[in-house]
Image 1 (cartoon, rainbow, N blue to C red):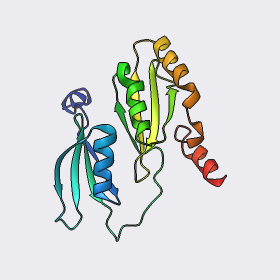
Image 2 (image 1 turned 90 degrees about the vertical axis):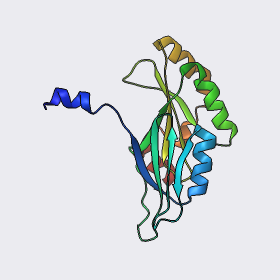
Image 3 (image 1 turned 30 degrees about the horizontal axis):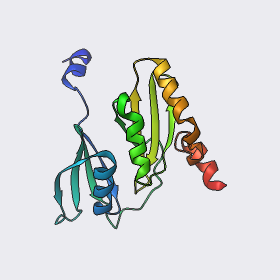
Length: 169
């Protein structure tokens, strides 16, 4: 096998795993906010866990073990979910209607036509919703429509340096 063949054989991402404080709260959030479906759950394990799917992407979610220290989660660790651009703004309005503070829309600086929205899950993991518009003009129009409610004060787009400044204020 060579590197070219390897990139054909490894053809996608299966799932990601993370700790949470409360499995019930996380299940409710991801099913209600992002339409996740529960594949299975094991509450009888030493470390209770469950597997959710959003589209074909799995979330292996484990109750935070009491002997594992809690950490601040850097912005680099996040999950981004694609949304149909024709339904992007409607999806974001739905998320906001659940009382979730959303930052965005933000145009992607390096990939033309992509815009993003950001929010936090109950354990402060950053979640991103991304729409890829057919043209830069369509993306710019969506950014313009959402400009008034962008919420840059949340600090979710600026990354860790911006978040540290906001926390200090």
